Image (tube, rainbow, N blue to C red):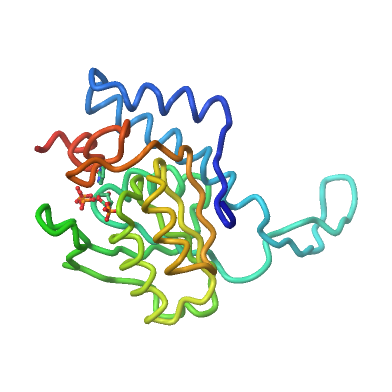
Length: 209
Ligand code: PRP
Ligand code: URA
């Protein structure tokens, strides 16, 4: 699918399998999500533009590569997005952070917003939206709608699992936003859960039901 990158690195796939396993504990699930997020962050930032600056090494002066442009924004879709956010901030500690509070209404599967806080100058920054699950894509579409309404023009969406139905809907709604995922699963079930999936990401991260 155009605009979709599947991160098939063996370490990502191995860790994902352990996360999918229903016997994996909350503590292990959280740790693995943090570890995977570092690897996914590496992929989603692979083509960031570089410029150079002059530095003095202990040996000589050189023109050394450095990231161009303003600091990145990581936009976490609460709650489960925070599991990806932590590892990404380890890799890019200077990134700015947006929080978007959304939950899925279990009956309608529509995304309900309860919180939004983002840096004010989104138009000048690359914004990477993070949420482990892209199921119907209602949450992802709502999150990106909101960020665009607040000025974001350059966005990427990073998740762990995507359903084909959700991917199609997201790419239709936001064709300008590339998606990075560790897996495109088989389908959604009648309750809107990803199959085979890993269950409810937020519940598995935080030990809730
Ligand atoms: C989960 C997940 C996504 C959403 C995906 O969040 O983290 O945000 O569902 O489903 P969708 O693509 O059908 O919208 P949930 O609403 O369960 O909230 P939580 O993270 O607070 O548990
Ligand atoms: N949200 C989740 O956490 N899991 C799913 O399978 C679908 C939506």
